[in-house]
Length: 277
Image (cartoon, rainbow, N blue to C red; front, side, top):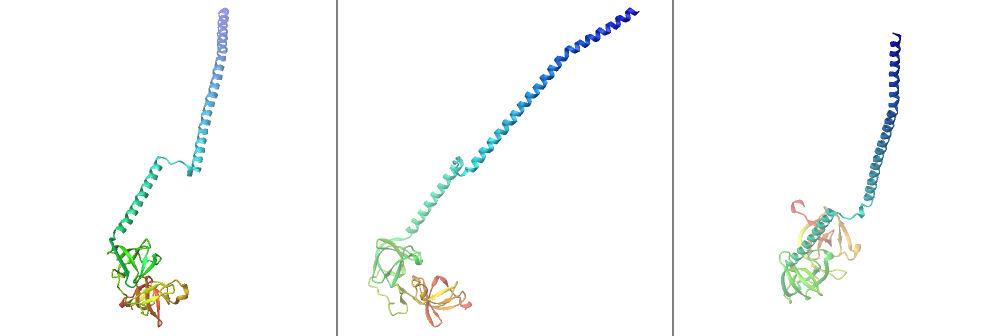
């Protein structure tokens, strides 16, 4: 009985010792596995850190490139789309230039070609362009002086002339092909005025009431060449004066104001209707 108990006790002790030995034999492997696991985690963490750093570095490079491109945007090369837009603009500009040239040719083509000699009925201005604008006046043609007329525009009432080798324009109504024509208005007539700078202005009689569109000067002669020395009075918008004559060619009107005969630029005046007088 005691021997059996001892055997059982010894058996248990041996079993426990075996298990303890087996456990002690497995411990190094577990430690190795744990060490390998820690090393694996460290390696994986390093790899993740490297990837994150690389991404941040790439992002910084992209931001730097973008900033440089924005700063130097004014010097960038034109891309395909910009090149096409520039080409379109160039084509549009060219088309507009062609249209302008065509319009100019059309305007010139409105004159019917003629070849005849004319003189002024009284005295007429020669214009650089067919327009009633004072700066366009280049010279005056007097009765008896002759020029060659190369074109007539019946619609606008202008004639194209040759004066000293250049093309000029005059109102056809003031010209005649009758080289023996003599004016009914001359020095001594109230419709003839010779200004201080020796320009003759011929007026046509009229009888109406005019008022200025804005503040205007009334002058002692139909010219501004003498500056303020010829200003005799002023008119405000709404004031009315009696007009006795006008020169369509020179652009001046003759008016009566405060018992005096004075002159005012016609384009600054407008006719007063009878019902508003």
